Length: 255
Image 1 (cartoon, rainbow, N blue to C red):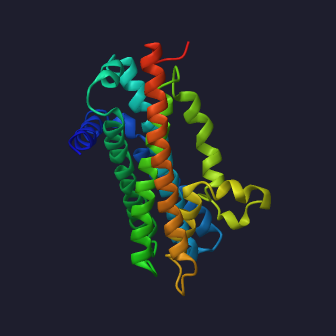
Image 2 (cartoon, one colour):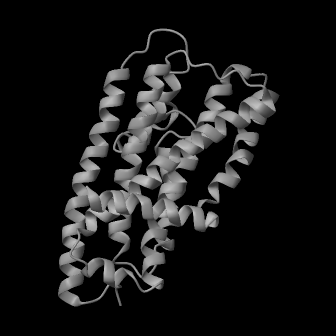
Image 3 (cartoon, rainbow, N blue to C red):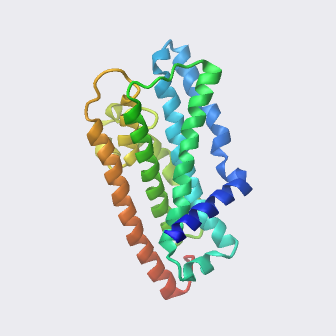
């Protein structure tokens, strides 16, 4: 637990000292502007919640993807990755603490998106089911942290994380139902969507904004937590495999 807490504090300190690493926070209001402009010009003010929700989910995913790569790339090029891997403290616990800080930062995306929509568009963002929304939001943050841990671990073996980050961004936006519900995607893509935690998160959070009885909310929340837990287990396994290979070869980069 001490190593986890240390990793969490280190990552927060990095955020404070290098604001450029969280540049998505600066870009997010413009995404909200685009989505709300579309719904308002289309005469669909009833979709304000969904229009503010999509950029927040996209920002959370982008932030976790970019920062997961930055954790490894920055440590590598600063010459400390070798030291961290060789340290007696558990590498996974340290990494999980740092990725937990990334997941927690996702709450900033939601707060910023909601605030911008209210202040500049006078949007009515009242929640029909606030408890389900909060539960879904917290579960999404946990699953995001777990996913970032797996990605950061795998990135240890790459020469640079940039290629992975660029490849994973928009496919997850689409398959995760970030911009449009999974229900409107082609049938062949839905099995792929359902292994991505964001597809369950987006359905749950959207449903929590709509008045009426929520159907399947318990299942959706359980799936977010289950996929997050499975991802965390995968992170433990990946860390073991990666560290075994690194210590066997004595290299932290592929040739």
